[in-house]
Amino acid sequence: MATISVDDELLAVLPGGLPGADEQIRELAVIELYRRRVISSGKAAELLHRDRGEFIAYAGRLGIPYVDLDDVELDRELDAARKLHR
Image (tube, rainbow, N blue to C red; front, side):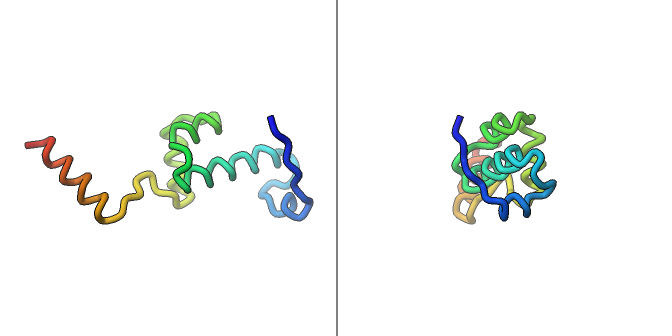
């Protein structure tokens, strides 16, 4: 376990204030790591002690898409799916 120092100014803007600040900061870190695609939805769910489906839905409500493909990647995925169904 690591300990980080967080100043009062940051603590003051956390929703819910000081009680539970460590869990709020943990959640924010995990969400950001998932948003950046550093960790998978499964790993994020595990770190937050949530069901994977619940985490994916929660991230979606925060505006973080589960599927985040550019046009080229989407075309490849659709082509692959079409080939499976021939």
